[in-house]
Image 1 (spheres, rainbow, N blue to C red):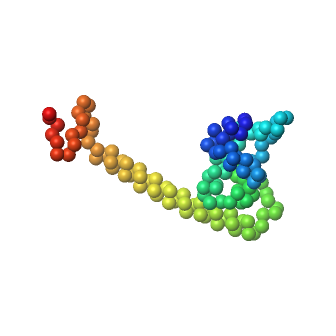
Image 2: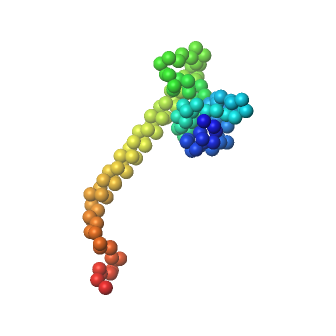
Image 3: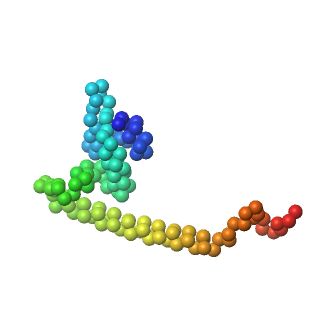
Length: 138
């Protein structure tokens, strides 16, 4: 697929997709005329990158861990420094904390919506609600 289609599918601007390419996060093939050609898998990759950026990870760190996220059990990084591993552990723990907060907030919203629906008066077909202080008759 071309860059415009990838942009449409992912909701990410062409400019941002070119930035991801500059950062080495995505590497499209090039057709004979020089156009970028993205494999279908890049749609998921771009969404994954967006999620990691939203979680606060830098593009530098994302570039290092993307191969692990594709096949975590088959990748071994002999050059993984203790500092990088400590940073990854810290980022993972931050994600865990954010997930817990998001889950609590989602559950609170669900409970609120459930209560509102439970206490909402059933709609009566053909009858409009009168404004406060007005009767339903004309």
